[in-house]
Image (cartoon, rainbow, N blue to C red; front, side):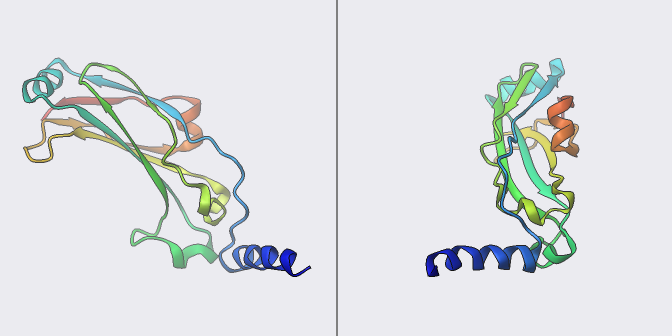
Length: 152
């Protein structure tokens, strides 16, 4: 009986203190079509650089979970990175960086993906400028949103 209680008590604390529930399996994988203008492709190629696609998983906290939100007032759920060579293609985001630990702390369990792209040459000036996107994970999986990159 003691063993059962030691499993139940932390779960009860989770449910009642921050409003989370045991995480159900969720896939965070999706695709992002990325288009590079000829100038963006040439800029990356000339510098020997690649484009980095960065995905941040976040969500609005429930009222009870606000104490664990970040400085922007969001619950962080991980990040994924993909690299592209500067040719227009679809980036597959595996979802491996998504951590469902706080899924129950997100209002309606609605995960938001914030996607931006940039050149991997952090020691140089930006080579490309790309349109960032922010949408629900469900929307990203249902209908891929494109990112367009041009030379900076």
